[in-house]
Length: 192
Image (tube, rainbow, N blue to C red; front, side):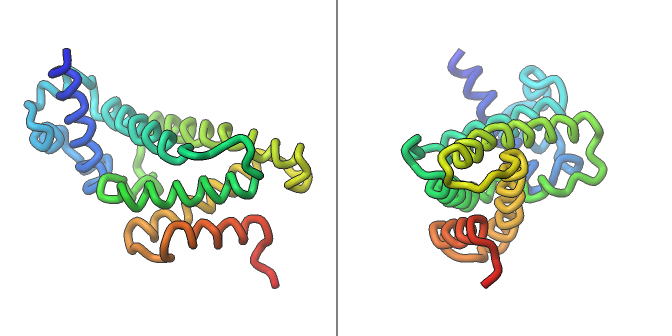
C-alpha cells in the first residue's frame, strides 16, 4: 500500500513539473510517466484521463498552498493584519514553489468547457473562504460597508496580478515588503 501511494505521489509531482513547463495541452502522459519513473499504463491505473490527473494535481497544489498560507494566522488579528499575512505567505509560497507552478493558469484559451468550469468553481471556493474575513472586518468596524464578495474578488485579483511577474521575473522585491505595499494600496488606495 505504501509503495502504491508512493507511485501516485510521484506521478502527481511529475505532473506538476510537466504541466508547469508545457501547459495542459502540450503536456504528454508519456513525459509525466517517464519523469515519475513509471509506465504510461501505471498513470492510467491511478488517473483515468489527463484531465483527471490535472484536476487532482491542482487539488494537491491548492491543499499545500492553503496549509502554507494559513500558518500563524490567528483569529485575534485585525482584518488588515490577516490580509497582510495572507499576502506575504502567498508570495513566499509562490516564490518557493515557482519551478513547479504552472505560469499559464491565466492562459485559458482553448481549454475545454468542463475544465474551465471546474477552475472557476475552484476560484469561487477561494472567494468564499475570504468572504467571512471581509465580513468580520465590516462587523468589527475595521472596513467600511461594502460587498464582502467584491472585496474578496479584489484581493484575489490583486494577488494574481502580482504573482505571475514575481514568479517569472522575480520582480517587486522581498515578499514581506511587497505584502506591506499591497496591503497599504488595498486599504488606502493609490491617491495621495
